[in-house]
Structures are given as C-alpha cells and as structure tokens.
Length: 186
Image (cartoon, rainbow, N blue to C red; front, side, top):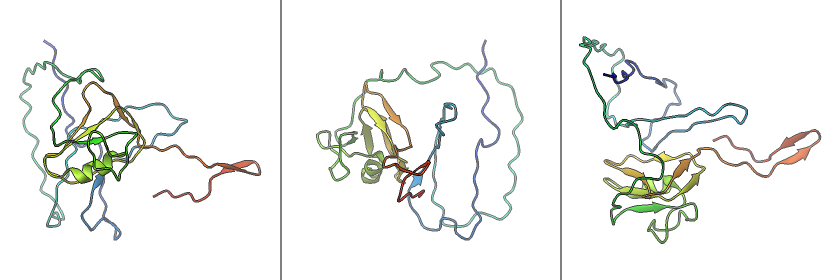
C-alpha cells in the first residue's frame, strides 16, 4: 500500500542568536512571514509550534542524539490532511474569547464585543483558554503569548486568513519617487 511521507530528520529552519543584544527577558513568541509583491505565492505551514521556558543556559556543546535504526515500517495513514476551509462544525466553550475584524482591542473579547486582533485575545486568554477567530483577513504579526494549553480556532463554518502584512498608506510623490514619512520597520 501507499507509504506515509517521512518526517525530516533535521529542523527545516533553526535560528540561533549568540549576540550580546539577544532576547534576555521573557515575553510572547511571534512568527512573521514576509512576502514580496513581486514574488510568487509560497505556502507557509507551521506544525507543532512549541515554546519552552528555560531557567538555565543550554550546554555549550550538546551531546549529539544517535539516529535510530530505520526499521522501515509499513505505515498507513488514514484521514490525513485538513478538512476543506469553512466546513468544520464544533462546540465553542462558553468561556472562549472572540476576535473579529470589526472588534476593538479595548473590548472584553465576548461574542458581542470581540477583540480586533488575535494577539490581544491570546494575551487575555490565559492557561487552557480558547480564542475563537471570526471570518476575515487579519493583517497582523500574531504574538502567541506563553499559556499552557491555549486553543486558537476559527469560528465554526467560517474561514480565517492571517496575512501578517499590513497595507501601507500615506504615500506622497517626491520628485520622481513615491515616499512615506514616519516609516518604522520594527
């Protein structure tokens, strides 16, 4: 029968920061993806994003982990992949916090008065909280705050897109060039 694809044996992407200006205080974890308008659309997938708090510095030279012997098992997968967008129907916990493109981050995050950003909702959610995102496109760098057992899900039957970029407005012509004042990259 068909065999399941093998997992990568090494990290697809690994970043290390040994500079003197590295992050030294606890805070949220964020994932940002930049896509140039002149490039092609490339799907980006995150699977099992995991953050761990560390009280001690890692060892200078970690001991390599031995590669297990490949026994070449005959693995058969059933139900692989995700359901088509907007087709899932499930129970939303009564304690869930909500996000909507028509919301405000000064709202309490209820169904009737949702937050505007996913980041604000994840910050307010707490351990074992649930954040339900209503349909729409969210132009934000999502900060996932370190909570244990946080669930982030689309509202049942709705489709959510996290763009990660923002629309830049306020352009003005300066000679033969278009510029925007007060530009901040971070």
